[in-house]
Image (cartoon, rainbow, N blue to C red; front, top):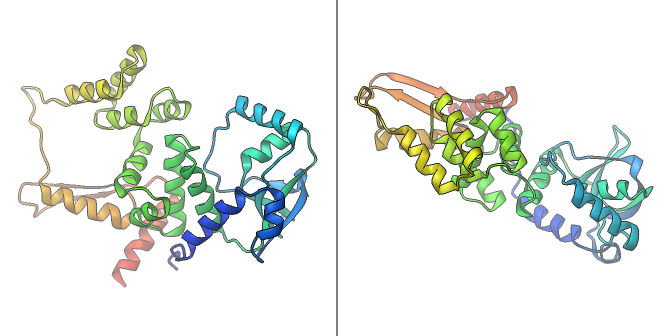
Length: 299
């Protein structure tokens, strides 16, 4: 059975959750919707969001927030949903506040309990809330996009609409996952920027890409300098000729990528009568999602 796309009410849910997550405990108590409640919960009864895209939490900033909580208390409650199977409350919004509360040594935390949230909404809220606050590094963002697309049958076009991004921005972010793991680690650490990552993607040869990556680090290249260096590495030599895809082939690739939510390559001869279609995937979930999309298109 094909996975269902996120409901049309997602935009309203995102807006509502963002609004309540910015309320003080007193404001929330007075004005939250009927499907929510405000309560104090033991920190031992709370678990992180399974779909949390953030992998890196700045320890120094967490310590600063913990100190503030010790002195002034937590002014904004976190948002959670109750998981009956675990008898725990899972964080929807506010994991950073929760971690800081733990560091502050407090045993309880104010929380807004969302009574009805499914996995789809949990995943979308965790990703979009972080993206809109620009809390994620480029790889965390890309992994969040891929997770949402592969698990919940969402196209790049849908995702762009949900996140308030262009489809090109979604596509460019996802392409960063094609880079070698050590380059992705540099992006996560902030050693290089997303712009540097896109410049590296211009270089198809892994050895030349590694060479450029080392030059970036050694000489502290700007993004523009990195792009110029990448173009220089791509220049054809006298012994080789560079094949350029026609506009029709590029358009066909783009349409398929939008439909399947992943990178697609068309390799063909000049007349396009014969060739190879390559569909990339990065996990079994993503492969399953692609298969579902293809089945859906054939029905």
